[in-house]
Image 1: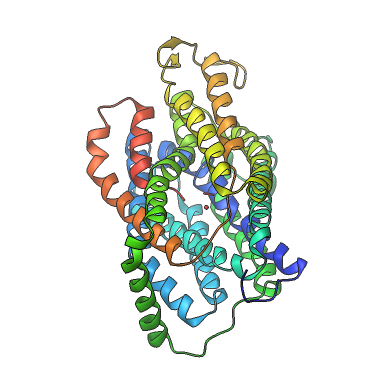
Image 2: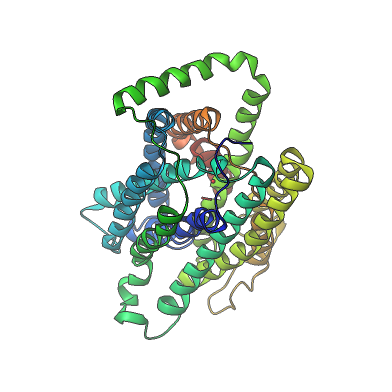
Length: 423
C-alpha cells in the first residue's frame, strides 16, 4: 500500500482516460492505417518502406534507451510527473500532426516524415512511462490490476472509435467529410492529425482531475544527481533480485517480440493480401473488440488469481496466435497446407487464407490481457534494456532477414526491435 491518499473516482477515471487518449496513435498511425500506407504508397516499394519503418522504430528505441533512466531519475527525485507528461504529449502531437504531409510517392522531404514518426513514437512512449508511474499513488495494491485493466479496456475502445471515424467518415463514403480527396490518400494522411488532436483533447482530464505527487522542492540538477544515485543502487542490487532479472529477460523475448509482431500486422496484411484502408480498418476494429474483452478479463483475473497465472494464460494465447500467423504465406497456411488467396473482385475477407489470418489475429486481441503496471526503477531499467537490445539486434539482423520468408522476417525483426502499443 502506498503512503498517498487514494484518488477520487473522477481522478482514477481521468487517469484511465489517458489510455483512451493515446491509443489512436497506436491504432490508426502505427498499426492499421498510416503504417501500411507509408510502406506501400508513400515510399512506393513495400520492401523498402518496411525497412524505413523499421529504422524509425530502431532510432526511437535507442533514444528511449539512452534518456529513459535520466528522465525517470529526475522525475523520481523531483516528485511531479505531470510536467513530463505535458511535454511528451506535445512532442507526440507535433510528430503525429506532421504526418499529414506524407504524400503518395514522396520524392523529397521523406527524411522529415521519418523524423516525425520518430518524435511521435518517443513522445507517446515516454508519456506512458510517466503516466504509468502515477498508478501506485492513486489506489491500493489490491485494486491496481482492476484500474489498470479498465484503463486498457477504454484505451482499446478509444482506438476502436478512431477506426470507425476513419472508415465511416473518410474511407468508405463516396463523398468523404470535409472534402477529403481520396485519390490523394488524404483519408490515410488524416490519421496523423486525428491522433494528435485526440491525444491533446482527451489527456486534459488527467491533467486537471488526477492528483500528482508533490514537488520535493529540489532543483533539476540536484534531482538528477539524487535520482541517478538511487538508480545506481538499484542496479547494484541485481544480484539480490535474480527472480526479477529472470522475469525481465524472459519478458523481453516473449512479450515485446509478440506485441511488436502484432504492431506490424497491418503492414503484413497489406503486403500479403493487398488490403486497402477499409479492409485494414475493419480488421483493426475486430481486433480491438476482442482486445477490449481481453483487457477487462485480464484485470479481473489479475485481482482474482494473481499476476503470474494471468501472464501464463496470456502467453499461451499469444504464442498460439503468433505461431498461427507465422504459418501463413502466399497460398499456404499452417506451414504448408494449400489455401486460396484473395482474387480481384472477391468478397471482403472471403479467401481461406484471409479467414485463417483473421482467426489467429482475433486470438491475438483476446489474449492481450494486461497486468498491473509498476513504475519504479525496475520497470524503467527494463525499458532501457529492451530498447537498447532491440536497437542493436535490429540493425545487426536487418540484412540477414531478407533471405527468410516474410512472416519470419517480421518475427525476427520485431523480437529485436520491440513494441511498446499498447504498454
